Length: 184
Ligand code: IMP
Image 1 (tube, rainbow, N blue to C red):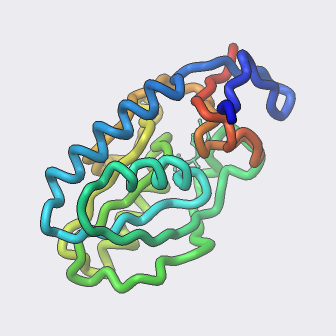
Image 2: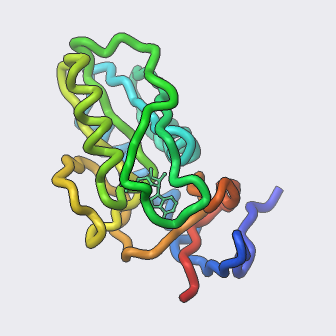
């Protein structure tokens, strides 16, 4: 079966062009997995994925983590059908695991303003993990207003809307095998 990688994609009335290829994504995810394997050896970390956007990245990343580890998920309110943050974050699903005294790695698809990450770090810190690190596949560096701790970043990208590889626009586009960017 060949991956879903059209030359351009129309979504919600806008056109997107390829930005990060499947190969670039897979290579970088492999590197991040290797780095985490080195840094967390013997720590039995728990990876916490932020739904929905991080589900594909996290599932690929975990398969490059070569040591015992666990996974759990939480869910935040989304952008809805908009391309800009509402400026408000609410929790739609909390983690099930007890992370007190555990080494926690929070896994995000993208950090834009940084509001979601800031909120999540504050929430998770109250649960007293032994350590708390963050991984984000993408970082819109110039759009980030909040001072958030980013320990592992896949790619720094411009302040433009992207979709694919788990990321959506109005819930579409998650199944694209590469990342597309708004064709301005
Ligand atoms: P922040 O709270 O502004 O940092 O936004 C983080 C969340 O917004 C991410 O987890 C995504 O769900 C969503 N988001 C931000 N930028 C994009 C984008 O370019 N494409 C798709 N979703 C995005």
